[in-house]
Length: 190
Image 1 (tube, rainbow, N blue to C red):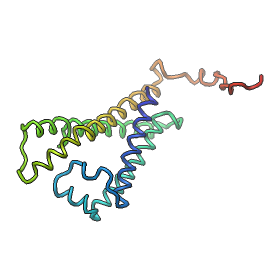
Image 2 (cartoon, rainbow, N blue to C red):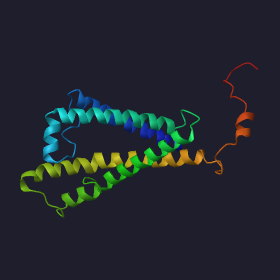
Image 3 (cartoon, one colour):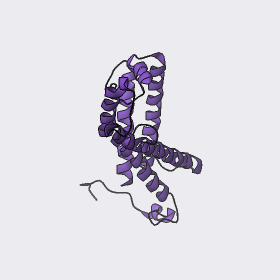
Image 4 (cartoon, rainbow, N blue to C red):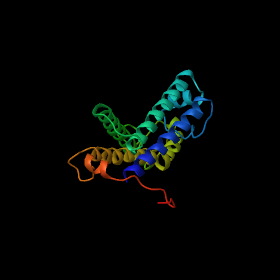
């Protein structure tokens, strides 16, 4: 489960980074479907310098996320206490941000999308059609994506933390690790 969650986080980070790289290089994949306030949306669609710089920053964050997901998957061992702690803090912070975003605590998200689409939340008439368009896309694509991504960080970090806890039953003892013979290739001669 730990590696499945970490690998899914890796795929999510890669997909997000690829989309942001596309935008930074002048592309527009899913750009119109991105829920943003009207001014920020206009800057994004116009590829202003500020929005391109933000896209490159997102590409860098995606690369960091991909590296963190690889570490959480157990791809790289062993980790010192400081690097391990930073990895866990970053993973839990990413989880909290992404789940809060998906839920609607940061503006967009399931709760606010549903409020807008059911008429419980109003927007200025000039932006009503755009707001409903963005809420539908957010409800069907972006919020589920952020919820999946954030949940994967939580599951992977939880398993990673447990694996490094010597008191946890899943943590192998150093003696057991030394006495375990290396696996043989199938079909090899003995």
